[in-house]
Image (cartoon, rainbow, N blue to C red; front, side, top):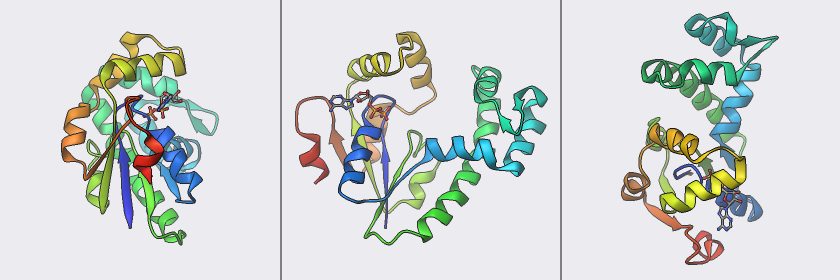
Length: 183
Ligand code: ADP
């Protein structure tokens, strides 16, 4: 059984994922997997170079910040890049999932709904926190500016949309215990 775990940037997905890992539930992190594939998947790398040019190459890897600066503010290119990366992550997930023996696994992705990955999940959990709390957390975590966090949020569904679609919502706004909610 596959349980999707999503939520806006700074909602606390990674934090909640760590609680699941602690109770021995396998967690697949889409963001980590895509970074790993950009470093190692030759076929994916070639497709991206064909789309964006040789300047995104760095040795035998893809330079993610070079890629980000090209696709930043270009919705069409961002979509084309996603259309290459998502199927590769999907295949990688399938391979990983076959190896798992737990009663269920967690599939964590910020853009679970945006990428259509929710269709592969039996249930979806949305981790929820108000925008102001999320921005403050990300500024503190990464040292990026409020404007940069807001720019990233623009490419994602709103927290409300995610919460409305999800089967379960974990409230991570400091009002109740997240561990109890996970259990
Ligand atoms: P996401 O993966 O959704 O972007 P994170 O799990 O990385 O969010 O959380 C963002 C930041 O907020 C991290 O530094 C994390 O430690 C902190 N954080 C998240 N949830 C809580 C919480 N319940 N209490 C305190 N800090 C939290």
